[in-house]
Length: 196
Image (cartoon, rainbow, N blue to C red; front, side):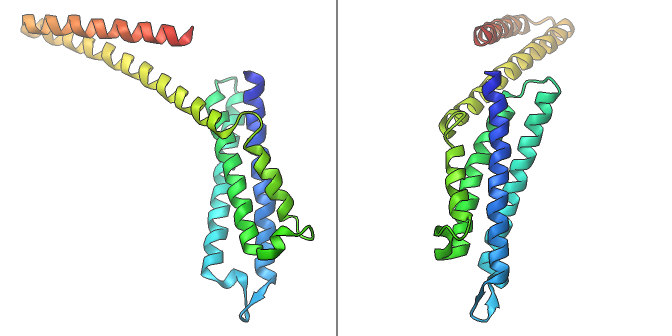
């Protein structure tokens, strides 16, 4: 799995690079192309597309850097690698699609590199695990964290109930502590089952 996780960090970086190249091609085209007497970059709709493309690219870069940093630090990074790969690959496809939209018909011809960027971006959604697999991995990590957090919460609640029962000596509090201890044992069993 470590090999796949490392590859996913690489796919995030690759997707970021593809998207950046498509963005720069679209930006250059929008500065040079005149329509109705103005450069395309002067139209609000084009500006919105370019701004969204830039934000998506920067988000992917940050996700990828975080996953790479966690790997280099020797920390668990599988979830972060999956997030970088999933967001990055889907983002690259979106950005390339928008670049084609900005270039119009020129986006499809080989005189401009955007058509190749789109094909390159599309494949990043497939290798090192499809987008559906990445979503499943991310969800599994989130569910595991929730179980662990609830177990820790129940343990702290049981400790608080024990402190309170010393001051009140109520039988109902003792019963509540037994229930909490049962919940803690269930949470621990679930945690052990997940780790095996």
